[in-house]
Length: 327
Length: 225
Ligand SMILES: Nc1ncnc2c1ncn2[C@@H]1O[C@H](COP(=O)(O)OP(=O)(O)O)[C@@H](O)[C@H]1O
Ligand SMILES: [Mg+2]
Image 1 (cartoon, rainbow over the protein chains, first blue to last red):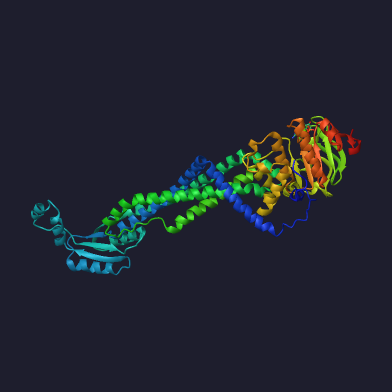
Image 2: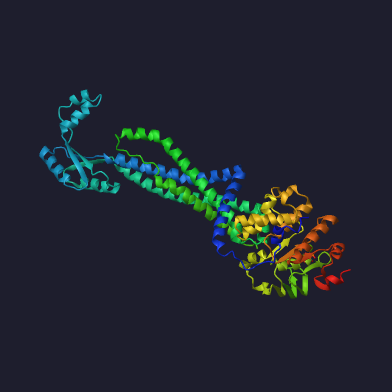
């Protein structure tokens, strides 16, 4: 047994003082416990690396998928825009229309705000073009008469939406003297419609996957709390508040979220890099008109941050539920 | 210090664990609560720590009625009471030092002050040399002393213990009880539940005897033979 002459010993048993001089320290100690909890929960995560890794991997994948979709859709959109940009609409005039009439129609069309340029192709030019195509030369010379009409190649203003192009095509069809309008741009409408579906699907998917990530972190924290029910009992018995008991678990949620957010960003960047090579070839094929976008930097920062909030939320919901009876 | 007035406790679906219990404990007094297994000793201590609530009657601590303490006030109440358990209830994955320090962390004491007080408490129970060890490496008696150090480290006015020597051999049990008696000498009120009559007699302190939840005898210290 220890000696009773030690003055430090007597301190322990000095008459109890309930007049606490701890008030000014209250904030400092609160602050300190936050740091302590953050550190302790991180150490706890690191002490069982496999479990932590699995949780972070599942959460990270769930968060990476929407990012990959975002990347894919954004680029398909840009590709569509680029392809649509030099899409000319060809208006075939009735055979028998003569040059001046063709020029007149072209001039009228050039006045339209949705038209960038109109090129008039004479029947002779058409024939020459055909002749240049391999194998046609001989056959064409056999014709004594040029059967080709005047053709107006109409280039819509760049940046027109698919439905605006569609309107232009409809207007062209109604022009007097126009026989046939060949619009190879209907694919673009379909693409835009498809992209709309894709965007909506990606949004729903992102919501579902975010929910999945929330459930994963919630379940991990739930198991963590139930495996530590004895410790929690002890903490409560020696006077810990519910907030005190919860704090390390909330930080664990934050850590899980942050780590999985970083993993998701990492995976998305890997996807981006994997796509970079074929995409740049595609871009080259469009003579630089195709600007392929990556993930914006703000998103790379926002995702880990948002994931941390998600982890905190999951931990908060679960811990509130699990500790509701603890007292 | 402690007032029980006509306190009854009926567990849900159970019979009455305590009935119409009235007794007082003065500040600085040390008392034993004894009786057969099932007499209601643990229940009495649980009511003091608000682990259970009474079905009837009034319990007051330092003049404050426990009935007025809501759920949110429980942690604060428990910080005023040092509790010692039969099975020590230490956190086995933390060092002896961390276990003893715990109430001070919860109480928001500054680190330097914490270290000083935790070491003083460990020294008091004679285990300062073990501060870096895990509880698993200690003997049953040593663990119980760590539990006691944890109970007194925040200088509670009241120390309650439920069968603190239940797992110990007689010699160790005496040492533990003498440790409690020492704390009483420094002004702490001590209430110990135990069914070890020979040990209780030896301590020459007040004895409250329960039987089937009723108080059947209240023997003053000087009357203990
Ligand atoms: N949580 C509980 N639920 C129902 N009955 C209980 C509970 N705890 C104790 N009891 C009953 O209350 C009575 C008193 O128990 P207890 O206070 O533990 O006695 P002691 O500590 O003196 O052995 C016993 O009959 C016991 O079965
Ligand atoms: Mg008992």
